[in-house]
Image 1 (tube, rainbow, N blue to C red):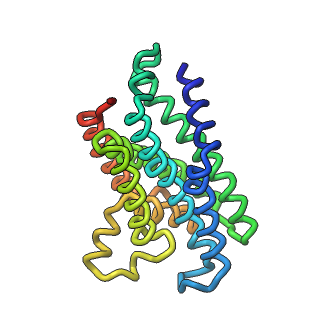
Image 2 (cartoon, rainbow, N blue to C red):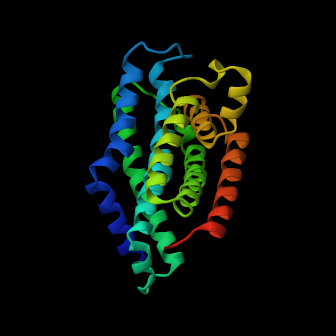
Length: 238
């Protein structure tokens, strides 16, 4: 039942035009626009700088924004309540949602990497495994934040808050603008955010082929532990 539910979750995302806009079309437009046009002064080639940020943006779009909005409305319309009456357990439902998020993320990565390679991106092959560890930690952090929001706020409030957080994190999370460009206090806040940790970590391992960036990984794991713990205590199914 877990695999069947995960398949249903993936099909729901792929059939939803708004979800596709959020999870795939916007990241690709950001990638192409900021890589091809001389809009930014960044170190090195623009596509090498922008691509890790866009990968992080895509992970956030699926694991946080899309999941928060989708789960919030599932709770409002009683979908979660009806699922709770089936043999699918709560753990099974959470596992199905996790598998669905990872599946959609895999599709996103394939498409974004293909477009980036076409734009001239040449990542360091040695960064693949550290990048995978960062993506998994980032997925856990954003999923915890999504479930915390969707399980405590009304669906309409979740929709507004998730989109607002998405735009704020896109602006100050180092996706297209280096956080070094921000003034001191704002930079300190930005560097503690999960999107900044994921973007900076991916940029470090994919551009330079360095080892696993422990500092960024610890930030992501701290966010994951904190948000998932709070979500498990506060999530309301109805």
